[in-house]
Length: 74
Image 1 (cartoon, rainbow, N blue to C red):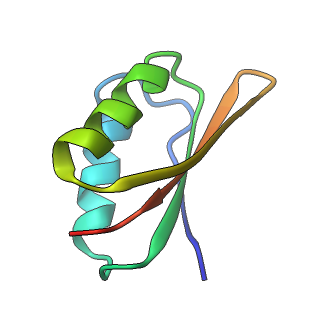
Image 2 (image 1 turned 120 degrees about the horizontal axis):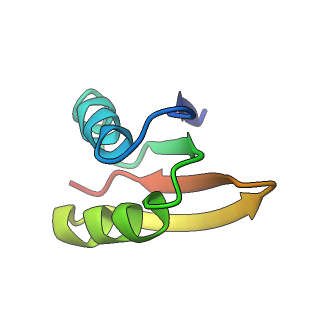
């Protein structure tokens, strides 16, 4: 089961703050879909994944809404 975190309407840095908080409660191997309409998330989410050692599995954009699939590795 994939967890979903809807961060639409939140501006930088709140999507990342919410992402970090949610990931702390998840187990290694679980996946999360982060949904954001913050343009800055296109750079912030991949950078956060690289910095924290988690995997950005997929990223898509549709009508100004970004969806990121992130797998917890640590």
